[in-house]
Image 1 (tube, rainbow, N blue to C red):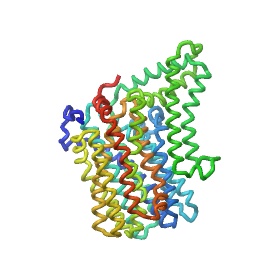
Image 2 (spheres, helix red, strand yellow):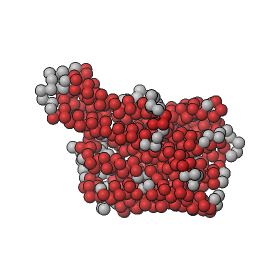
Image 3 (cartoon, rainbow, N blue to C red):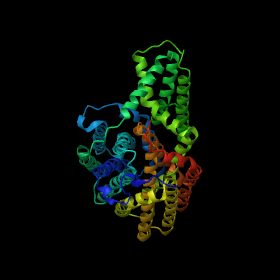
Image 4 (cartoon, one colour):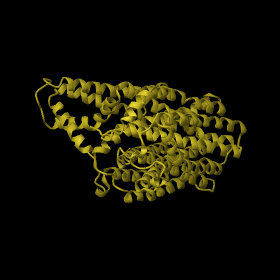
Length: 533
């Protein structure tokens, strides 16, 4: 499959593009996005492991990552709510700064806790970090999409590489520091205080980042707002209440699920299919909302007396802010293609997610020390990702959209088999290094291809909400479903080799979906950069 000619704006092989101030900013913001994953990922896992918490409970602690899978529910607010902090920063960067403050404050709170005083409090504080991090991810991704015009395909690809490199710099490069210091006598509360201070230092980059260019987005939103206000003025109160119910139901379901599904039997909510069932229900509710809205649009005349009051304006604001981004995505792609794309996004990195969630536990059980884990799993992975991100971005552009994703997905899955070999060899450092090198390169390529793919699918008018929707669904596979990884290992009797072999084949369904959508994606991708109406 051919890709758009990236030479229409700037040469793709010009490495100077990565010295552009905007690309450097995307790299720095990628670090802001990656560091919280250390706080609620490897650091929290090791803290709980060393405190004697079981593998299954450590796996369940991964449910805090669920907020990354549902942050699209509140993503429209970041497009509309202006924070009264630093007006010159603009909406996107103000939200990023606020979230950084919240993350640093949560780390300060973590530094006062210990597993002896209650694991639940630690996990709840980690949940606060996850909520702030998931919210800032919305703003960071929207900022990156807004920085580059649709015709700057080369910069979009470079931005994907920079975002991936920045994320891994924080997750692996900075993430190795707590692991190294933990072997030098530092306590985990002290390490969380250190991570909080690091967060504040990194946040300073917000104040020298460039402002994204203005666009015709606001004009389009104003037209939508006017049309929705006219529609709501002609809609009866009962129909507007039904619309409001369909709008609030998915949000209520998400909050109820996060609160522990109060009132339901434990056996039901702990079932492996419970979370997927909730996700399917959420999708069904959103589809019902879009269908009902279209019914109102077709029946707008004679629905009721014109009523252009405060409630009418409120309903119109809700439609424009919350519903329009999803409606636009399904309208542009068609329901069948849109659902297929979303399913692909959920499944593509599922195997990698299961591996990543249990990798630290595996390293510890196979016999590696915290220092070795830090040096190879963190530092080496960071170096490999940094070295491979730019070549992977250029390589993916050469392959094209579908072929690049398919090839990178196959290599990403195949690299999981090396972990199976490592499970047989035991704490063999050369094999550990080889495994990390191969896994780092394939993950870098797959990540660059994936970020570029979903960026291309975003409408310029609704970039924040649509990117949040797709990255949230990717997080569903990467985090929420992977919370059962510990239970899978236990169910396999601790057979790590078999576990990693199973994760290698988890990519097959997504690749079959992608290949089946090749023709439709050709048409979509070739038109993705046309000027929006």
